[in-house]
Length: 256
Image (tube, rainbow, N blue to C red; front, side, top):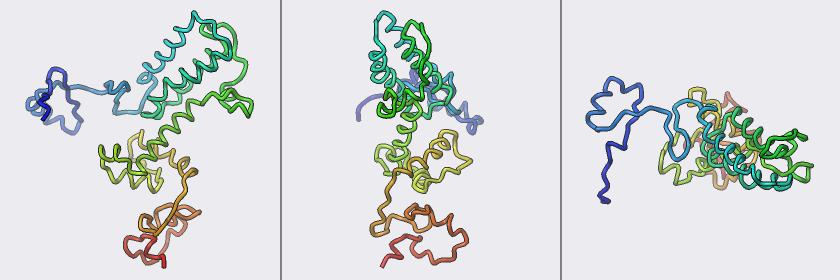
């Protein structure tokens, strides 16, 4: 045992509406103060509802603060491009790996980077080329700056892949087989799921485009619900099937 003890003065408990009748009893037993969402946890807001632009204000302020700190520097256009690639583009990486950033937040981030690129820290000048064009590879006439939206999607898809591959860090925490089942089937039609989860599942088709399925001996693949056939899950192609399932419908049952 480490000998560490919980400090009630530095701890709080957040109760759901379902336990309001036992609220006072729980607080008395634990001896904690009652807290409320949103709160800041590991540098990002923890909220029970969808993320808003107000929740992301610390991120926006951080970007603005960095740009303001360069006001005394005489950066050339090429220098500002490198600063955007190496510094400004890295500021939202952590947030983008945790949340699907709201479109309004992405627009503000890109607008501030656009202004810095073309106008510099002083804000003098005008935008000469659209930001979409700047985010294209150099081979296609762009500047090679990575799009905030595409980086955000790539980072969230990486989290989805970790769930699909049953990463021990994630599954050691939640251990929820239902989550694994939904994503492995790439089912993004769960209307009753939380907002963030629905947004994650809507990215699954993008993950599907880059996946390669190896059936092997068929032990890990379900015949009807898993994506092993070019047509996708056979469940949707043959909805009125009357075929023998056998051993939970694993493909191995039909491999000779």
